[in-house]
Length: 117
Length: 112
Image 1 (tube, one colour):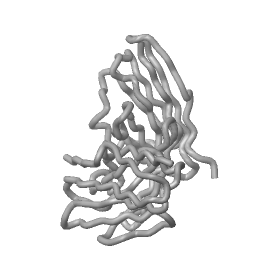
Image 2 (cartoon, rainbow over the protein chains, first blue to last red):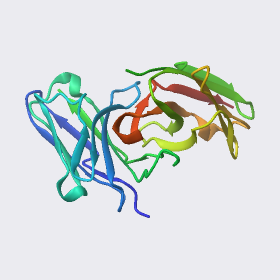
Image 3 (cartoon, chains in turn purple, green):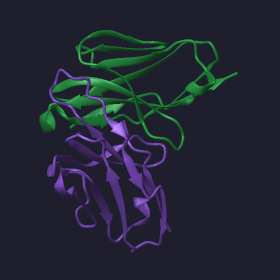
């Protein structure tokens, strides 16, 4: 079974520039998450999709961050304009959780490491 | 809201046993997960406790006490490859039980 694919793995940009990250979840996984992980910290949820609908974007800085999941499969996360504090690893995860009795396992991609200069 | 606490660092020697604790505050608690993350790598799932008690998977075990809002990950027969960061994550009732909030992580260093 192929895992969660993300690209690019690394990106360096100047502040105020824009950047986009792409994620392809595991086939059949309805739920997709974008997490931001700052060095030395735990992953912080930015946005959660159920199929192609947004379930939770309460922690997404909507003045600069946007995300979409077309056709309920691939997803893109965009930052425009970037700030220095956006330097982090952006992790995409997917799950096929069908009920509370399931294990609740998230499958993560390798992440996209963003450096903003 | 939710909050989780873990020790920031733990050091142990090869072959030893180490316990990483996690305390949490949340409403509508469903369960506690544990993830391992090597430097530069993806978090990988280790275990999940939906009910009180101990879950064992090979050298790793995880424990949950819902009444104490507390859990731990127990790593036995430590190996050098176990050096990594370990995160607990609370699963709560928000977003149809698919909301996961991660703790700050515990960095484990295994010495020879």
